[in-house]
Length: 127
Image (cartoon, rainbow, N blue to C red):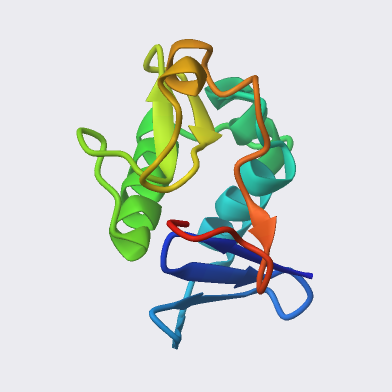
């Protein structure tokens, strides 16, 4: 399955990301982070849940997740202040957002009111 968001396409079978029609190399943990956020959409995922998924049965410093999120945002062309894809919710949770024309209702409700990704090839204009 291929999911399109913004100028990105995530191929779940090939475990690869394309941005602007070019394959973008991702570290395995970075791919896993994007994968879990997309699979859990539109739910908000806590930092503790991400830690358990990404580093099961291993203690890692909070900075490890912070660094990973920062690197993933850079690859996706996203920033914490101008988030189009990954949004920090109350500083300890993350969710995947719809690109550009996300509704104000969704922003207020912490991403719980809609599914934000479409299968590639079927996404509406503006995604």
